[in-house]
Image (cartoon, rainbow, N blue to C red; front, top):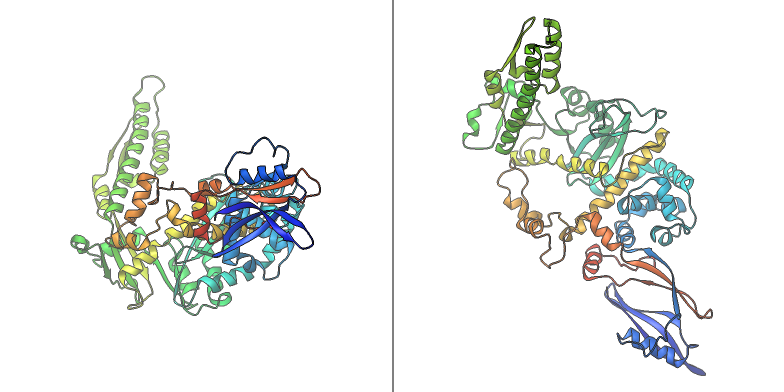
Length: 583
């Protein structure tokens, strides 16, 4: 958007012409004009000096010194981009169709987590008039607010969570659609919330209280619903409540639930998913794949000429099994196994050296066995070693037969589904299972970009509201990245990427355009390529300036920094104005 400022004299009936400072800009395809100040009381010399400056010519002297004062400048461009996109998506109406201060505070928290993730205390400080860190509080007319106001807004949001998620499901899910589901964990601060418990951490933070949260998304990875569970809840235990959501609350007649092999176990399929009439897609565990090979249901020669094939087994009646061979996965598993074996050998060698040293050697069969067992269990490769333990000796060797038997299945996995042909072909079934990577991408965003940790709330409802707020922020972030893909490292040519993928089993391929952006760090238009975070930082250099004329008889006004070419393109892609909230 290009903004032009100019001075104009307007006829004034019965009085001398009025001298006005105006700006002209284009919005929604229309040219609009806005009066910024009445300069009629200015001396002619000062008006002439200002006119020369606006035309890009130097003033005849320092006639404008002290004529205006910038009383405040607030970073505004990123607020206009994020909040404008939220309004274009109808996020505020999704939170609550009835406008209210509580709704505005929730919107502010969701937008702030995208712009600059921080604690509730820091966000409240950044929204207040006196300590504003951006124009977000001013655009939303929040005035004075503190952390207690934000906590009250979180309570309001928690009460509306089911209603909001129902609306999201109606917007993004339909009969016959794929629904992706997975769980993750987040470390918890404090010890008083009943949801915090020691469990199996998925975020790499060990030995701390945690919560478990499960995320439902559309097939494209758009978040639809999130639920928080106690920190020691097992993954399969969370499935039943998701089935209830899909069938009872969302009212979807036909849906395909996609979950990983640790989630949709045989017990969960039998007790929760099948009785609800849901179709599902998951995968077999490694022992089940080995059993298929042992019983002859899966012939490894199938992969001599193809990388996927449908098989049947009496152990899985009425189900489709799609066996896949991924050479990239095969190489990765071989590399990882060799790395684990080498690291274990290094530790076993230390035990052998301890037994052979002259000073204070390790003695006792039991003591040696305890140390060896600890080493072998650490990396779960005990089956690939044979050991000989004596009272004063220790030796070890790789079990090559065991290693070779495991290596035969490297790169092989079997997708299991209740969906029958012709609803989905084999390739679509495999692609649907691999789409779970979309949920994993959301979890990475929760743990990095959106700062789901640390969780410092003490009540169950506040913790649930905290996590739900992060989901709304990710919902907003997902749409921002989709619209701004041409300027980001995100692949903006999905069709070409799909064409470049030789098989559903092969790793996802990037389009030539995306590879060129990654290599040159520039777009085809020679603009620098950004991540969403760095692009929002760039937009933050657009400021909302409050200007006060030195003449107290003249009203103050606001001016927004003129965007650069990159910033203009950003707002054009978003379909919003950088002047959002400016009177």
